[in-house]
Length: 428
Image (cartoon, rainbow, N blue to C red):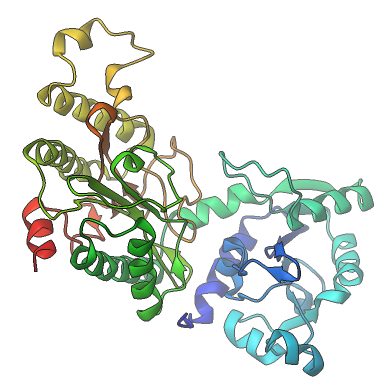
């Protein structure tokens, strides 16, 4: 993975904005991610908490950020707690950042060791009245296993019951929703790398290759181009596997006459790309496959103009569903007369498109933000209409990443999606 260096001013400015949004006499605590055991003495690859990275740039495990903007001692207003470098330990686990390196990356001059956190936190908390805690508030997130921020919240509420506790996540969400130019640059690079991987796949796919071989072509290009790897578990589904929305086994064989649906994206500088493309395994769409594909493509192109300030994801979903409903009528999946008499709670289109068509994207592939949030300039979202016809073994999704603006900006215009482009590249 290529190490991406940010200007510490990016992280410093993010902290300044957050500090100003806190109530007077407050302390805010942002923890890093846990290291998670895989098996035996092996951990899963570590990936830093998006929030901690956003405010510090530090990707090392066992890191914590504390903001106490009104502390009497200016040196205690911004503190990073980190692992103390140990030459003996580093022989086994690798290099750890020095205080100078942490300062250079984050712009925070006060660095203390994580083993001293309890003692220092007590001094900071007793000089404050409000404690802001950062818990994972993603709507669809439910974890039966307690994580670091949650454990800390429980401990602090027991130790300091007379303090007032507040949610930090809503304040951070407001900041992270609007992408700064450097963030969009990194997302654009993630999209570019994703596009080169797709070009590689187009020249590789043919009847008889396996889905995992296709995935291997993707990761080869991601790593070669300096990305961390996949931004999320990729979907590589051929034939009936393309009909499973969250299919990630990628163990099947791509057969002649089938469609191959791929939902994949590179992570570059901790920022995600999220791309979906559907191609014919043998390099040539059948007339029916082409008709269905072009129906989805027409809707995607037309729907891009919806990503303007003032809209919401909820509104976009409803508009795109209506557009896809018209296309489905044209494809003969049901009639306009049947639509008029349908149960509004169980619309006919939902048999062929059962998911929303947009979500926020950034440091997380499903980034912070609500579907009822009014869009503002600089937000970045996906646009991913699809159609899934089980009786015909047709699963199609086309997905691009869009920057909200008066004239929306598509970050994936260079990634082929026209039938003619796809077929030509597959026959090179």
